[in-house]
Image 1 (cartoon, rainbow, N blue to C red):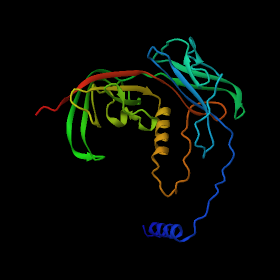
Image 2 (image 1 turned 180 degrees about the vertical axis):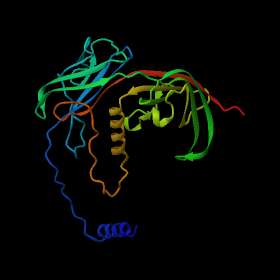
Image 3 (image 1 turned 30 degrees about the vertical axis):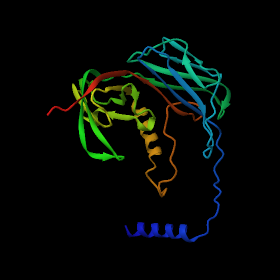
Image 4 (image 1 turned 90 degrees about the vertical axis):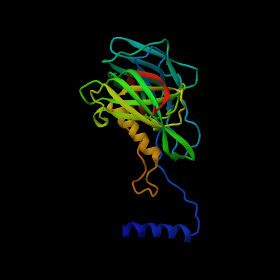
Length: 287
């Protein structure tokens, strides 16, 4: 503790007493890499894959999109074709509504016109695992004795009846909706659970609690997506980077989360998921 305090004192002294100088950071020149965001689920719909280029570390402009790519997803028997929609957006959607099936391995293939990091072909694989079965839900509001962000906040408890499949080793993301609006809509806000650590493995009842301002009569919806351990770790890596928990930088610069895109040291992740939703109206705790 004494050494740490001494280091902090030296840092404060240097910052306060030395004249301000402009610091020129020298960074290595790294070629642009492909950044991929895509998924396939067991829902019948248009599925999406987004392609962009990585940018300069200090750039404050939007990432450049990758257009005119050839994108497909296959399970070995079926091939789903994508088209850029709208043109020039870097957003690729299936040419028709399709769905994946649990128990199948899906492969994403991407071919681009101009090489990125000396590569024109990229691929990724993801197994579509089974999901939690959610038959019904009871949503109860408790008044919280605490105040958060200068506003009264309630505790929402969702009691779900269903079944979480055995054996242990399943991973999920959880999304929360209030009256149709998604509340955790960025990857750093994703709720991830591992059945072994959360105590839900093989359970037929599992409660979830949230600090959110729901009112009596609001419609609450929970969405579960089965994910791989690799995607679970990827999300955890994104959260660590976005949290900024080391103000003095003693741990060094953050590394990119490890994705599953093969070819040209590409970034991002392709995930296959089964989706389960359950919905209820909130009600007050009975006395």
